[in-house]
Image (tube, rainbow over all chains, first blue to last red; front, top):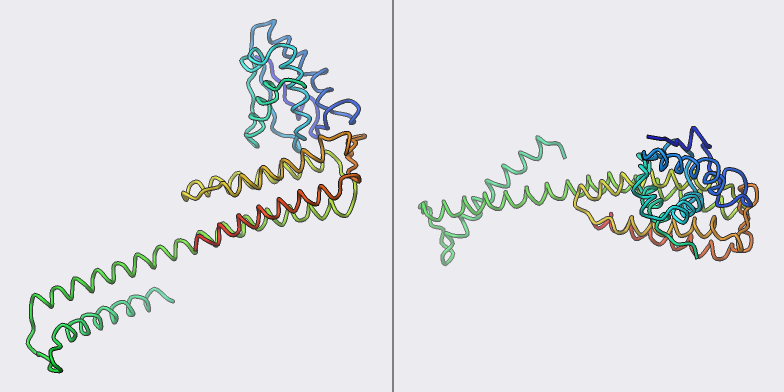
Length: 106
Length: 188
């Protein structure tokens, strides 16, 4: 299993949606960590574990941008069936991520 | 009232109840029959016991409701106070850092979730708490995810163009808090 711990591997203070909004955006997270690690997980046929705990909190746009991109690129079902989300502090982040994966960009 | 005093009060009420019941059942044309009628006395006793049972059950229910109210209200109050502070922060400036708004939202989520669980465990409908959650999410999303109205630069949102809309939305949140407080007060 491949693991991403957002607080340890990326930042404890995630930003907003895109590069234009500032550092540590959802887009940056997608480009630097989420997409490469997911591609590796698919290649090695293992699941990608994503730990959402430990940050100062997420703006909804951060999670939405990162996971909507992943869903767009690999297909919603493929993404959902190949990730394991850990969010013990705020369980509803898991619902937010799932909604983003299945959301189609307008 | 102390527990000991309560027991004496119940015993005295019990005896007075039996006595008055007996007198009333024996009252015929202004004459008091001093003979004891066994059947009527037993009925009086049963009536008094049932009365005491109902009174103590109601008292227990009332005490439970008051305790529940006293437990839940301060918790909701503290969440409302946090929101009021957040609101003051929004009013006093026309910009806010994304990390700050994310931190406040996470703190709110961490506090509201246990309160919802408490509502559920006491078989109370937590729809009023869901409504607060929905309005706060909507407010935060409006501030942080509307770049055309509220531009973000270096992770700082400038919401100077939408202060009236933010005020309208914060008022909606306050309305939901007031409704939730009303629901908690209705427990008693």
